[in-house]
Amino acid sequence: MGFVPSDELLGAFAPIVVYWVYSGIYVSLSSLESYRLHSKVDEDEKNLVSKSNVVKGVLLQQFIQAIVAILLFTVTGSDADSSKTKQFSLLVLASQCVTAMLVLDTWQYFMHRYMHHNKFLYKHIHSQHHRLVVPYAYGALYNHPVEGLILDTTGGALSFLISGMSPRTSVFFFSFATIKTVDDHCGLCLPGNLFHILFKNNTAYHDVHHQLYGSKFNFSQPFFVMWDQILGTYMPYSLEKRKDGGFEARPTKQVKD
Image (tube, rainbow, N blue to C red):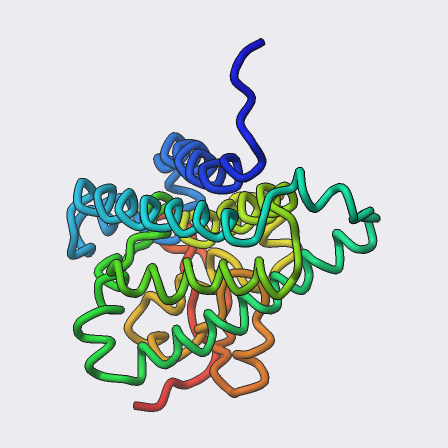
């Protein structure tokens, strides 16, 4: 019989595989100028970091995430142990996933916002992510290693622990969260994209945050926009056609300095 990876191993590495496969799909579609939020020329000229360095940065973050995931699964026990005493219904699984989404969103909103308002943290840590003025799919997890550890890795660990999900459930949840994060940075507004239909927190919403006028708005990620709306950091926008093709997310309220 061939090697069958455990749920713990899949939980650690499946999101990484999903990240690069889903990003690859968007790379293959990146020439569709009529659906881009920024032109390909802008992507090449406005960004302040090379694509090779972005790949290296993402791989470093994923390496750290995988180690933390393996350690977390080791400490909390395996599915083989937990399945002997637990019977999960679809309602329980749905409740765990929604709880994990809310925990992850809450953690990332407040940590993300603080990194913008603390000048030291922004200059030395979070500004690395904003070198991508024109976001693209495989740059979604391009962060300073410290930010990756605080926002993504710690946030993911908290959502896993607080929701009570199993390693098997985490395979699907974190793969979905990975797809959503990549989609938010893909820079394309494709017709029929379910993420744009079902979530207000989408590609255009996050693109606003990456622009200079929106750097103090739209901190929410990766699922909902509730904290931005509750705490007054929501930046409404309209999606309009650019003269040279594609779309542009334009703010619909005046930005105060």
